[in-house]
Amino acid sequence: MGSTKVELVALLRERQGRGKDRSHALARVIERARAGVYHDWDSDLDTPKIQLVNDLSAVKRVDLSDIIEKVKEGEFDDEPPTAQQLEELRQSVGAEVYDKLFPEDAKRRGQA
Image (cartoon, rainbow, N blue to C red; front, side, top):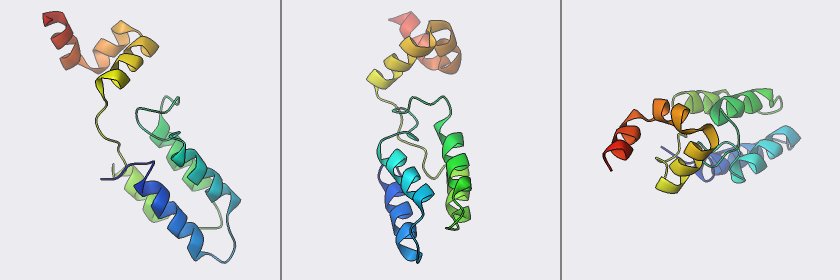
């Protein structure tokens, strides 16, 4: 399993280097990945991996079909969230939605 900020960026940069012409669309995806746009917990997007698949699919000059499949299979699912990331998510979506998403954490909070 790899991170979207590290391993995915390295893989995309390597793929960008193989082609004769540099793809501006791929360069944009690389920069967004490096900035955390596709990261499961650091992104401001509601569905960062869906956006990643869409953005990779939009790249036309470089065949990224194998990488798209890896994303779909969870190869770049980021590490479990930290307590701070979970609390930020809870603040963002509200306690009721958060408790539905993370019932185990809700139980733990109820017992504290």
